[in-house]
Amino acid sequence: MAAKSYDNPELNKKLADTRYHNSQSNPEFTKDVLKTSRTIANMCYQCGTCTGSCPSAPRSTYRIRLFMRRNVLGLENEALMDPDLWLCTTCYSCTDRCPRDIAPTDVIMAMRNLAFKKDIVPRNFLQTVQLIYNSGHGVPNNDVNRAARKRLGLTADPPTTHMYPEYIKGIQKILDHYGLKENADRILKGD
Amino acid sequence: MHEYALFLGCIAPNRYPGCEASAIKTSEKVGIKLLPLEGASCCPAPGAFGSIDMTVWYAMAARNLVLAEQMKKDIALVCNGCYKSIWEVNHILKHDEELRNKVNEVLKEIDMEYKGTIDVFHLAELYYDPKICGIQKIRDSVTTPMTGTKVACHYGCHLMKPQKDRHFGDTENPMWFEELVAAVGAEPVQYRNKMQCCGAGGGVRGYDIVHALDITNEKLINISEVGADAITELCPFCQLQFDRGQIEIKEKFGDVYNIPVLHFNELLGLAQGMSPQDLALDLHAIDCAPFLEKVL
Image 1 (cartoon, rainbow over the protein chains, first blue to last red):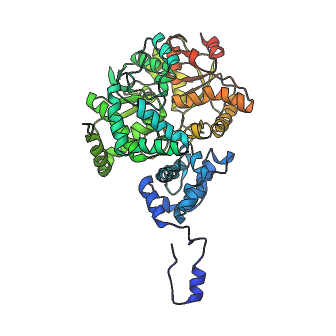
Image 2 (tube, each protein chain N blue to C red):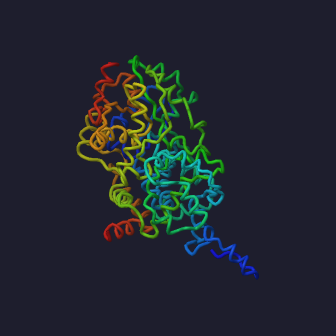
Image 3 (cartoon, one colour):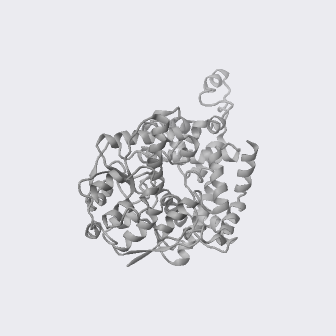
């Protein structure tokens, strides 16, 4: 994002403050985050209530306020390449306390979605997709649990896609529509 | 009898089946009938799945909603994570026509259409709601009161937060869960930072287990400080994090708590006379015996 240009070179120099305009900025990123997050992320005034409310902050370098600023400045690479992006437990404490009525949690979710589009995503997220594609469940049944279920008078498999596998086809169609399983397989293979 | 389609999710039926069994049995005693929602899938997990692609998350949750719409029943569920996916997607799709049309384009491929004709509830809110059940009915259903036990309530995150659009009110220091716990005869105890997250959500348990356990450990310190005999929660994923997490915390940090962890359905089941065998409490990683000895 370039600063507005004036005829006065001295003024131009003063206005080209790199803290606000640098070569890394991508204004499209801010727009993409706004669209995916469905929250007014650009209204953040950096008070830090979010970081103060965050259970992940005291035990890591993850700072939600920093991600909020990166969004406003369009610092796409800096935000998406940061491994701390994946330390949000999505507890929504920051969202409930934000004095600007922004949902910082949803900003993080949007950034994760945008990172995935660039193949940046931890393995466990992709494995969940594979499990759901194959069984309908992110946490599928197992033999120990089947035996326990029978002891309780429940069916060995719950009345979900486990008991009615004919429904899995519909789930696979939805996931295939978006190419999600294909992408998950491809990224996991490339590791 | 109020009838609901029971949306099971993953962890309740596939890891803590006592949670499913007790949901069905305890609700019947207070005038709620839970019917199986055939062919339901993972909600899908709001953190682990939603982090990858929200668009697909909407469509997948909508498929589960359509199954209940076809039954013409409102959904009841027992997991905060499921609540986040199923309730929230239902809420968003009801209010956003553009998104609803997009989702329906995809659902058309599998001969389904989301219409927005049902509502979604957590079973605990139905228990609390005097129009459906209410505290007095819960109290009347108790045959084995949990007298003499101190129980710490963990609300979890995704049932009440974000507060906006939801109808649970205050998320800083709510007390309605404590009222439910008091109704089964236990003494609900207050502890520091009650509303803190269990640490498992958002895919963090899978991404960085030590980080997740460190958050859990902080909660366990606060809970053990007030001498709680058990933790009760409304979410099987929080349950897994507190229950198996205590074993993992012992291995990784050397801290030992041995505090039994019970879903509120399981606690209510015990209070209504279900045996530990009826609840498959042997599947819990932390032995529930010290708690059971106090009440049975």
